[in-house]
Amino acid sequence: MTKALPPIPFGSERSDLDKSPLEIQGLLSRPIWRELRTFLAVAKSPSFARAAELLGTSAPTISRDVKRLQDQIGSQLVISTFSGVTLTETGRKLAMQVADLDFQLFVLSNGLKDEMDDVTGRVTLSVTSGLAVAIVAPAASRLNDLHPRLSLDLREQVSLVNFENNQADLMLSLSPISRVDVQSVEIGTLHLIPIASRDYLEKSGVPQRQFISQHVYVQCKYYDSDREIWRGWQSLVNSGQQTHHCENSLAYYALIKNGAGVGLLGNYVLADPELVPLDLGVHVALPIYLISLAARRQSKPVAAVYDWLVDTFKTNPSFANSLTFPSGGHEQEEGLRKMLQTIASPPPPSRFG
Image 1 (cartoon, rainbow, N blue to C red):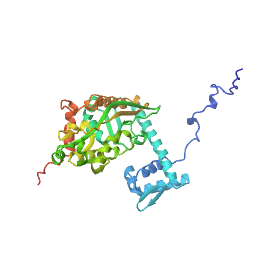
Image 2 (cartoon, helix red, strand yellow):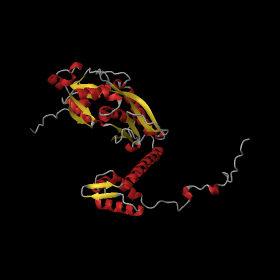
Image 3 (cartoon, rainbow, N blue to C red):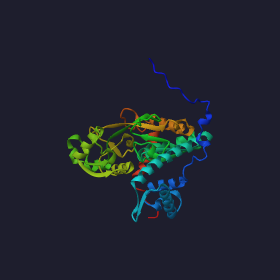
């Protein structure tokens, strides 16, 4: 026998029992919104002085806001010393929560603006410096032609795996994010292969698999992982002579470009005729994902940048599923070649001597 459901004491007709938060005048937080924003700036800075620069105010004002917030909460959040500021454990937990709130406000404010505007406004894209300089920036003029009133805000990635930490509308990532409210779409493949400059090859000869130990290799922080996909490259590095270690992708490219050794670079940099691919049995293929909040995709400006990015990568042969080398006949390759030649080349002689 099926057990009868208990009677429901109130129905939807009793609207007086289902009030909106806007109808309850006393439902307000303490007046600490300004102090929370100040505290977040402090949490992201090494000192009160730097936080003051971020907010366009003075260090004493920052100090007063933090003290007022600590008094309101009743707990110490920051330890200030001559060497800078440090968060307490309570301060660190609060900072993470405020950062999440700040991102929600960022999404909300952008969403409200999008309701008023057509394809107008600013769209923030989180991207590594390498892809930003080599691929995204050279294609920005085409975005200008399509949407003259749209502004692209390129930001260096704070996190390669956490979307919120980057506080952006869109994110280019090498890892998908599995969440109901987040969309991850594969738009291309990044092909990493051993590459050296012609200067290095003239000085040290062309590396061959049987003579790996005779050559110099430059390691990147991103490749120094215990994941299986990096084992082939790590074997080369460990078998040879490792010179430099680099985290910044542009600096890493510059080291290879200037003959510091053999590096693992994207095939797209071969648009630079001074770089040469090496057959050393290493090829790392990484899917490129375009990450977005599902709700923000409804925004016209965000949708416009999203479509532009998809087209930029889908039409570039360097990011096809299979490994290819630049032929020199593609428009994007020519733009990239000009860009790369300006990055690690010595400046021209000054006319002033």
